[in-house]
Amino acid sequence: MKELVSHYKDNRNQFNSGPTNLTKAMDNFLLSSPDESEWQKLMKVAEKSIYNNVFDAFQNVGHGTLDKKYRLFEHHPQQHKLILTDHANTLLDQPEIKTLLINENQSRWTIVEEAWRAGLSPNLLEYNEEDNSFISISREMRVNVRSAVDVLVPYQKDLCFYCNKKLNRFALKNEHSFPDVDHFLPWSLLVYSPSISINPNGVWNLVIACAECNRGTMGKFDAPPSKNYYKKLRERNVLFAEEHNHSLKNSILISLNVGSKSQVGAKMDKLYQLFEHIKGWEPKQVFPVEESIELS
Image (tube, rainbow, N blue to C red; front, side):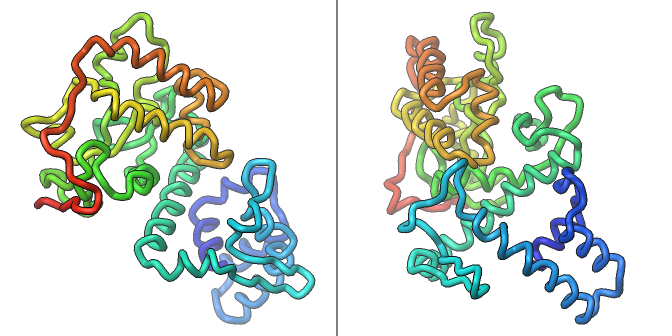
């Protein structure tokens, strides 16, 4: 509940359908002296809303509900009780996984909330390489969410997309392990091709790479990667499109001008055919995943 109040305090635009009993209670709490008695008043209102809607909605994906074997908790609304499943406890017992989940959750909310705050649709954001920000497709307003890197990094298990080097999200930009946001198919090739009418800055074309692979002495720069890496990216984008509530799903569909996961693969195949005649770039060294190291 404290997290909800914190998010609401910074961005009330998320409740654009009008005030509810819960938002009114949070408004009263934020305007009052935040002591224990005021907190308890808020909790009484929150408990009614949370048990009626929030917990059940948490386990919804698109228009369906998660299969029982994947659920993180059992909800017993009559008893006002939640029971964590073995699946949830397994995740919570792994500090690295727990940290990844927290970071990804926060970074997804950052994208959505910054878009709301700026009056934009979260689905109409594209990456701007100059200052590591996301901007609206209309380019009328810039939204700074560098933390969106946390959305992509977990899918790569904190490894460089190309060489598997361990990335460090706290590294300095001049360090090899700094996570660069890389255009997989070079922006310079896509933007000047009259036969291509897609957004080269869309999430579909972005991966996280180490500084050495992206801009080092043997880096890829404006070269398209080899076909093995293309297949890896294609698989990732189709996976994003399959996940109904993925925060980047519609961004991928919109920037590729497609409407379904099957069309994602077909459109990408058509794009990559334009570059198959070019010898694909590969990193000078590829680390085995279990032996990937972080270089300083």
